Length: 110
Image (cartoon, rainbow, N blue to C red):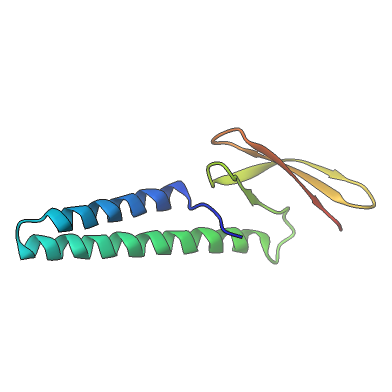
């Protein structure tokens, strides 16, 4: 499943795009090379940030006795757990995004 990048990753990708545009419009070879290096740096930062965010979420939930986390489908931030309803058939987790107030519900079998 494809996920939208986080807001931070989006900012880094926008800055990489701006650097590429500036490289195309640069008057000298030195400026073109500089903006090309800046574009590559912003791209590496975006890729690294995306990986760290996913690893952080994975490490938060794996191998611990903590309830699962979820990311907001609207703004891609971590949602907080608001309620757990348990019965013999399944566990129902309710999440709320603190950034955009989106709510979600996840049903898991024990």
